[in-house]
Structures are given as C-alpha cells and as structure tokens.
Image (cartoon, rainbow, N blue to C red; front, top):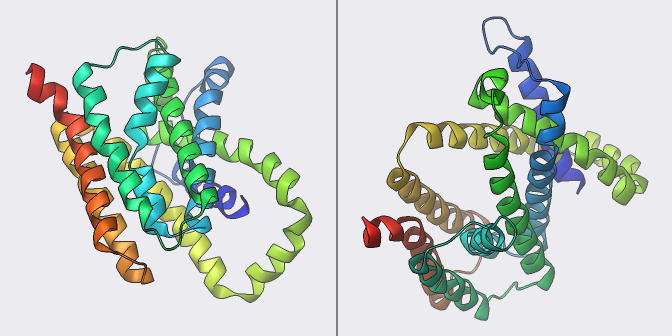
Length: 270
C-alpha cells in the first residue's frame, strides 16, 4: 500500500510541476462540482493501481501480468451488470480464450499465490469501474473544455487517487511509517526505484491516454496486445522467472483472446 500510494504521490509532484513551469501546461479551470463528479474515477484509479502493485509483490510478476490481461472479462461483466450496456455475443465468446489462457498459465505456476490472484482480479474490477465512470464523466457538458487537455485530465485523476490513498495508507500501514522512512533514507535502491517507477507509471499512462485520442481502435488493440507480450516476457527474462511451455501457451492463448476481443465486432459485423 505504501509503495503504491507514494508512486501516485510522485505523479502528483510531476503534475504540479507541469502546471507551475512557464509555457508548459495551463491549469484546468474545473469547478467544485466537477471535482466531486471526478471522485469515483479517482477512487477507482487508486484501487486499480494499489491492488496491481500488491499483486506484483505477492507472486511472480509475469503471473500477475497474465491475470491482468483478463481485464476485458471484468469490463464486460461490469458494463453489462452495473451500467446496463450491451455486449455482443461475439465478444462474450471471445472471452473464452482469455479466461482459458489465464487458467492454463496458472496451472503450473511455481510461484502461485492466492493473494496475487485475488489482488490482480480486484485491480481488474477497479479498472473496469474506472473506465465506465470515466466515460460517464466525460459526457458532462463543458467538462472537456474546463479540463483543457488529456494531460490535465490524467493529472486531476492522479491527484484525487493520491488523496484517496493517503488516509488508507496511514490507517493500514501508518504504524510502520518510521520504519519505512529509515529504510528509504538508508537504501538508495528503494528511493531511486520509488521515484523512477512513480514517474514512469505516470508518463506511461499519460502517453497511453494521448495515444487513445490519436489512433483508431485497431491500432490501440494491437499496441495493447504487444504491450502485454513485452511486459510478460520482459519481466520474466529480467527477473529470471519461470516461463514453462504450458505457461507460455496459456499466455499466448490469453493475450490472443484479448486481441480477438478487441477486434471481433469489426471482424464479424464489419
């Protein structure tokens, strides 16, 4: 919890710097009512990030990323059950390889942990709610103009996420704060990794948001699939994690299912 919230805090510092720096980014002119409407998005973003961080620390990073790849399944269920949106039959069928791939990749997982699985699934659930709440939010008349840019939109979301996470951090792990500060000061690896991971997380998400605005659905689907492959294989190689054949097969089926889910309506219905 501490690492996840402080990573959001690094993003807040970057966002404030971008607003304060001359000729950099204009400050959004949002109202109090606008900020209130943004609270659900901020809360869901905080939950998605913090549970993702916990999932990656509770088990193999590659395993956590494979479970995270099943996010479309959670999005489909939440969109249908909570927000009353319709999902085509083709998309529902495309979820079969997504879920099957995750299950197959988990069968021989040497570093399997229920806590990692539950945390990754919870992160997917928060991400699904965030996507729907964000879409509903951006339908507010005039809000886009008051925010000013995609960068400002993500900055505001990050600030709200940090504010939501801070009291939870203090309530859950506040008794260990002095211990963490001591470790932070004495170990340069922790301090360096905290700042760099927080900054990279912010910049990646801001760039991803900008990319969504400037590319078509097919490009986004292919890029997202490629990202999953690079992350899963990359972390396994760097961290020396197991990539057994059955795990690779499950990973390939699951990620292929994600790509199919993204494109199936265009393929079937034109």
